[in-house]
Length: 192
Image (cartoon, rainbow, N blue to C red; front, side, top):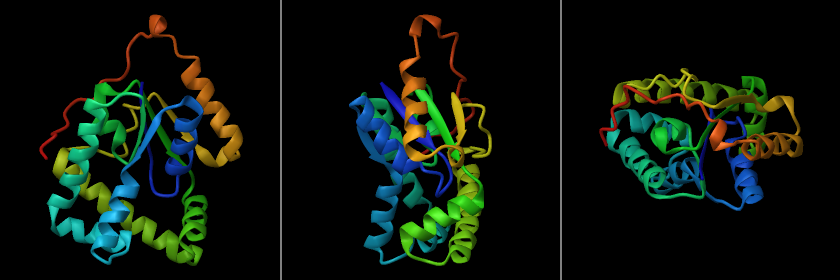
C-alpha cells in the first residue's frame, strides 16, 4: 500500500504521517525532512532555501524526482510532502490532504522552530507563495486544486490521537471491491 500525505507547512503532515505509518506497519518518507537537510547543507533556513529554489529550479526537480521514484518503485510506505499526492499520482492507494487555519499552523511552526508566532505566520505565507509559483511553473500543478485527494482534513478539529484514529479507520474501511475509482491526476508535466 502506498499512502500519500500532503498539505501546507504546519498542517500536521509529518506528525500524522509518522504515526499513520507506525500504526499500519508501513515505512515513512518525508519530503520536508529531505528539503530541510538540503537547506541546512547550504546553511539556509527553509524560507531562504525556498526563495533560493526560485532561482535554481534544479533544487525542486531533484527533490521531486526522488519522491516520484519512491512513489513509483516502492510499496508499503507513507510518502509525505507538499506534492506527494501529485507526484505519486495513480500509484497511490490513498491520497490525503491535511490543512489547518494559518493561525494554528503558525503556532505549530513557532513551537517547533522556537520562534515568535507572528514571524512564523509571515514566513509561512512567503513560503507558500513561493512554492505555489514554482509548482505551477515547473509542473503545471495548481496546489490549491484538491480534487485529486481521496480525503481532505482540517487537522485542527481533532487532537492528535483522535485524528490518528480517523486516518486508520479510513484506511481500514477501504475495500478494493467497492472502489469505483480514484480521481485521476492529469495534465502534470513530470519534467525533472
